[in-house]
Image (tube, rainbow, N blue to C red; front, side, top):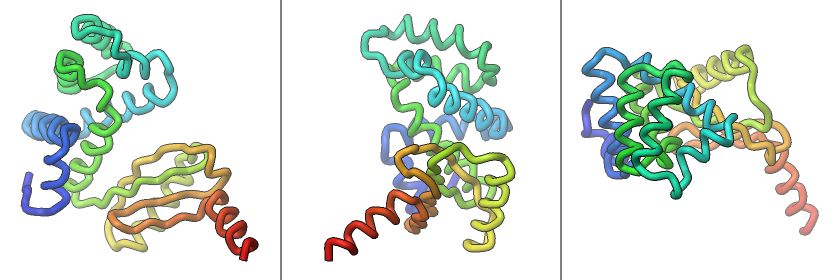
Length: 188
């Protein structure tokens, strides 16, 4: 991986960036980038949908051994690939499971860069369907001129619409922002 770009250098500067870069290097060397990316997507979904799994990754009361044992038990249930499973064990031993969301996001960026894509962080008020994601990717591809990978998350406080970040660009079409703008305009 080249570190000459500002993005790569800033990614490697953070703790989660160093972990994500190490995982990406392992995945690239094992020709397993897609498998690791799929496993990380499964983990992100589990973090979003399971309070117990989220507690497992964030609880300061769980020791290194207990966290490692819990991860070893959960990995086969989630269907994680061997590289990701070993990586989670390292995170558990180093008490860094709480950094998983940032590591996952950074890994996605690195994988997208590797494929020549741009990554867009997309926050929606409700989960998007596959058709909506495909349409969004096409619109973003037309806007930026190359393939766009999307990192999806949900924030119900938006009420409706989307907030999209691509690099330093931000496109905010959320109802929450529109209502705030209207409220400020009405104040005078």
